[in-house]
Amino acid sequence: MLTDESPTPTESGAAAPAVRFDQVVKRYGDNTVLDHLDLEVGRGERVTLIGPSGSGKTTILRLLMTLERVTEGVVHVDGEPFSHMPGRGGRLVPADERHLRARRRRIGMVFQHFNLFPNMKVLDNVTEAPVHVLGMDRDEAAERARGLLELVGLADKQDAHPTRLSGGQQQRVAIARALAMRPDILLLDEVTSALDPELVAGVLDVLRDIAHGTDITLLCVTHEMGFARDVSDRVLMFDGGRVVESGPPERIFGSPEHGRTREFLGAVL
Amino acid sequence: MWSWETAREGLPLILHGFGITLLATVFGSLLAVVLGLGIAVLRRTPSRWVTLPLRAAVEFVRSTPVMIQLFAVWVLVPGLDPLVIGIAVLGVHYATYTSEVYRAGIDAVPKGQWEAAVALSLPPVRTWFAVVLPQALRKIVPALGNYVISMFKETPFLSVITVNEMVHEANRFGSDHFAYLEAFTLAALVFLVASCPTSILMRKLEKRLAH
Ligand SMILES: Nc1ncnc2c1ncn2[C@@H]1O[C@H](COP(=O)(O)OP(=O)(O)OP(=O)(O)O)[C@@H](O)[C@H]1O
Ligand SMILES: [Mg+2]
Image 1 (tube, rainbow over the protein chains, first blue to last red):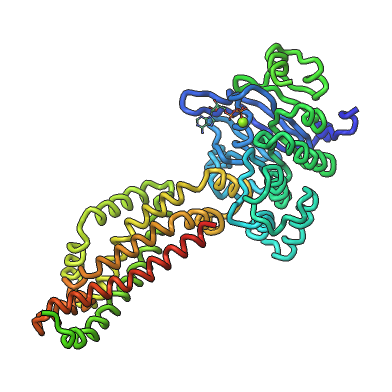
Image 2 (image 1 turned 90 degrees about the vertical axis):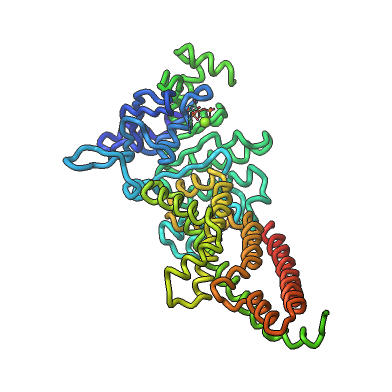
């Protein structure tokens, strides 16, 4: 039933995928975290990454956010090279800061530990990037920020300092802050795992609303299997730097084919 | 023998010297605070062509006595007002220390703050001035303040390059009137009186920034 409602962007044919990893390798010293990974995420698709600790889920999001650089291979966004750019003679060379800066604003990220700016009020956290990156007029940015804070249920906290908020509230501000840049692609890295259990539901509700109310492309890493089932079109199971299994949530959670997936789900469910 | 008469006579001269001392401290500190920040930021650039020479220069300035630096510049750059030389040398010397303070403060800003700035595509100027430095500064103001006070207490070195700061003037008055006791007692008192409000001010500033 869920799959019927969900967009199936791969069917739209000509449109390039939102994200494409082409034979991506990521090594830290001798530790190969991603091993010639191929991965595609369609426009508007919601993909959840699951897998044991250390399997490279965060690394994938960090590569996309340009917080890390690939060791080999190329990351494409909207059909253009992102981690690389055309160099002399048309060969792809690692992207410079300018290339990244021009493209990275299509992507937003919400972190496990919120990373709000503690020296700014809640509203300023949300308006900072629209004003200073998009060049939006201050009043307009504030107006939109108030709208986003309302969306995440924090309209009354706009003048608060982030440190005065609960973890769940901070994370909802962080979501509003990321959305304020109107990213095409939103990366969520275990956004509820630093929260007290009673605060998790509030954050997940906000994310469900966003997933159902927008056509944003979502890549999320989560241990909340119920949430993954609700929002994802596709679940990817990672292990040892590779995708071991992928498919719609019903199938992955209902009848996993791979032994590693069964083992992993057995441990977390 | 202590003479109130002589003390009263010497006071204006010593106070004038104190004005020069203050001038040197204020401008020397400004230079140290601004230049130190510049050094700290430049030292974080990825280019070794910038960081290595900078590190060498900082190491060099820090490992030679400020007195010798004063003399050297005074001799090598003739014709410049000694007070200007004094401010420049003190400022640069202390910038090598304040740059370390800034560096520690900047390093103490969590990595997640930089990452959030990248995730929001903030330009470097905003990342530094709106995110990192405001968080770094509140932790380092006390340490910066201590260097300002140290510099204040080192201004008597300026007398070796003929700057008529307070100790220089006290010395002159002392020898002219055979009244070293009065002259240096007054100078010491002025230092004492001046450092009390400074310390109180510093503590207030610290408290305000702590919240
Ligand atoms: N900066 C780094 N330097 C060295 N090794 C790193 C670095 N970042 C990650 N790694 C290593 O890369 C591997 C994958 O890490 P990653 O954080 O992507 O895993 P994960 O799947 O997100 O795990 P978890 O579920 O614990 O968050 C781990 O072995 C980790 O130790
Ligand atoms: Mg992780």
